[in-house]
Length: 140
Figure 1: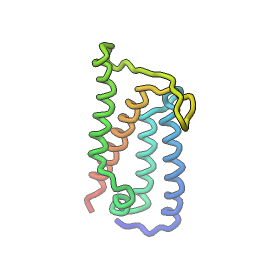
Figure 2: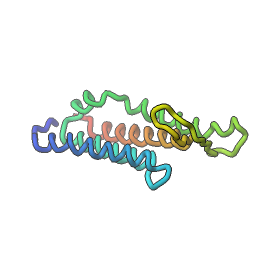
Figure 3: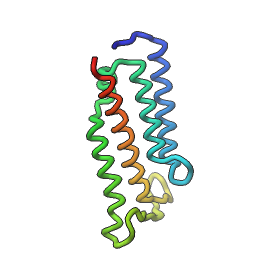
Figure 4: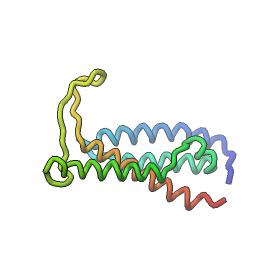
């Protein structure tokens, strides 16, 4: 179904970027405050769903040419690999490591393996939810 509502499409483009930027903020804030990969992924899915409501599915597939099934697989590998990495260091499963580093652009930064796990969760949530939504709504 192709919609031609200019007001809805224009508003959806603006609101998409606001929601997407907020989801990135929630993703990065999740390590020290509520949020993280799951909530950030749900917000990104909601932003993409808003675009799907304003445009048809073929337009969205041209705008976002990602294979969301592959995105889900990469997210699963990243999350499970991060969690299983602790086995190689002979510490309990899901033990995360962290350290403080001086990076050239970011300055003094604390890096955690939990961020890699959250990245995997983010990819799994976005990939699986959009795959489900496309399979339900893509039969036109």
